[in-house]
Image (tube, rainbow, N blue to C red; front, side, top):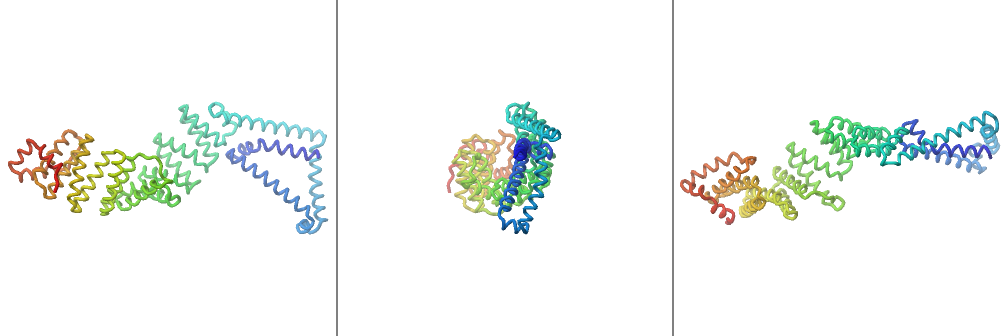
Length: 445
């Protein structure tokens, strides 16, 4: 039994530092190395146990080796060699003693180093300890992640970057180090390196939707529009719940003049975030802005009915969340659509509501544009010219107080035309347009 005891003790002693040694020797991540090492030991045990139990059954032994005699002979032949070696190893000869002592010292040394590495790696608040642990085994991705986090807290971004790169080298399939390094590169505006990082990462994880989103954004940074669209479509194909991909596609398609396709993606984004499992805390202004963009795309692609409903949705959301500026934008766009559809009463009420919202907000920039839009509407819809003229004068007056608010060039031509039609009456309107403005605000058909 002595040699059996030596075998068991040696196996136990080797198992303790084994994963660390494998990580150092073969450059595997420490966690992966531990799992591989444990799996190999378990497989070895399963094979031995299975073989022993099978050979105890004479029928199975006969099937495998044709006869009990062959089984006994095989065991004797195999066992004799192994047993003789194990007996020598457990014996008292000088060579065996030296080997026993050397193996014990080596295993103890390995085990001690492994335990020191383990102890230092757990001191996550001490950057020096983490650095020393990394020297003992650089291929420990979790350790490198802790070290990078601590280096960033201390303002050492270069050391943090080095730790993240080592973590990526140790565990190429782990997205954690890649995402952390990518964030650092983007913060430092190192877009070319960030693009190279995502391209290299996609070789290991070609079906990672988040990685495809990032690669698409960076590709667009270098004007690779087609590649960006391909990445985002592929991300949606892999994971249909990637709502940000819908948003990126919508924006780029809209910019490329494909308003109808863009509106489809805006709608898909809004539908996904409205589901119970997709409701995350988002700023109301952001959601309303997206609804307005969708409505604009629908209006430009001749989907007037859908656009009107979308503007109404945006107006309702803005009113409920107290976003008066966005409510004004939604109302003015509704008014223009209603006017085009010949629904003058609805358009009139919406224009007036818009101007009241601008006044309560003190938003002179929007007020100037909206007064001009209202004056043009009154002029084109056959309302009294003096009211349209007063609105255009108001638009010009407000625009002068906000130099960064350019009015359409047509405002001058329209104002001049109305002046000629009004004749001497235009002078009195210029002197005191306020009564006419109040009449315009309360106008009904």
